[in-house]
Amino acid sequence: MSQTRHVPVMLQRCLDLLAPALEAPSPQQPVVVDCTLGLGGHSEALLAAFPSARLIALDRDKEALRLSGERLAPYGDRATLVHAVYDELPEVLARLGVPKVQGVLFDLGVSSMQLDEADRGFAYAQDAPLDMRMDQTTGIGAAEVLNTYPPGELVRILRAYGEEKQAKRIVSAIVREREKEPFSNSARLVELIRDALPQAAKRTGGNPAKRTFQALRIEVNGELTVLERAIPAAVESLAVGGRIAVLSYHSLEDRLVKQVFAAGAANTAPPGLPVVPERYQPRLKLLTRGAELPTEEEVAENRRAAPARLRGAQRIREEER
Ligand SMILES: C[S@@+](CC[C@H](N)C(=O)[O-])C[C@H]1O[C@@H](n2cnc3c(N)ncnc32)[C@H](O)[C@@H]1O
Image (spheres, rainbow, N blue to C red):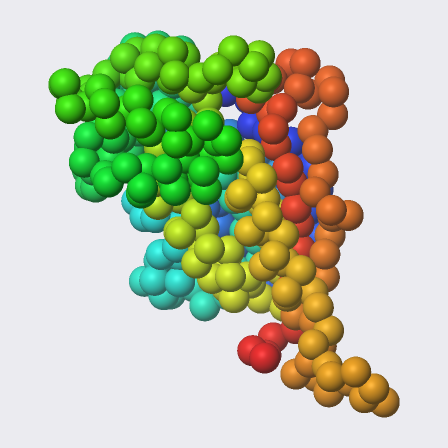
């Protein structure tokens, strides 16, 4: 498998956002966590750009860890790679004896490897078993979700995670078809969605199966539930002055990140206090104005960067509110 075809998204901007925390003179070695190692593109750049830093990188996909392990081997013990779901960050840091870190990066979603390896079932463009598990050692795959979930639950998932307006129509077709024969491969699902949608709905938004596939992937991997725990945990793990950067690829992820950052950056004092006590003061400073987007040049060179939204924040206060 070639590792060169994967181009890390908004790489320079991620490095710039984290740099002040990783370059500041400090008696201890700065630690940066890449919560989504993938093929190691961002991780390798972090190791190269911040030669005094130690990298701890997490992924729930063992294949990603194996490939990146080879790629990052030249960095020796500056890189520690861990098989973990990213909401386990506090336990991982405790196990490694690292109380606080200076930088955290999340590059959410699936990796190019997961998309490119047809047999993992993430891509609607190729026929493959409907699996979609990022960690193939645990949990249930997309086919089981499709074949066993009650119709109401499937509608909820397609609406919530795929923002699919035609969820009811698609789920009726799925239920009809699965009674004839359970789903196993992606092509049958793609075809069914195409047939189930009215003409008008097919004219907008690219491949009509895209939203259903996104919804199934999020459900199979519990992506939003995990992220909801992981972003606050990551903020918690930052030392004062530490910085976090998060790349999201759809509005549900980005909304969640935005909410956590906004809550951390808010002054929660009751109105009218002449002096704001420390416990009401923000714990975070926002480093990006809204979400930053990739440049047109980057999108032209790397289509997978197109939906990216980047947000950054800095920890400015220690105490819990
Ligand atoms: C977009 S890729 C990261 C690509 C990486 N930044 C690079 O430059 O090569 C996202 C990676 O995060 C992993 N991942 C997604 N959700 C995860 C989770 N909840 N916990 C741990 N890893 C996760 C996926 O397995 C995938 O390898």
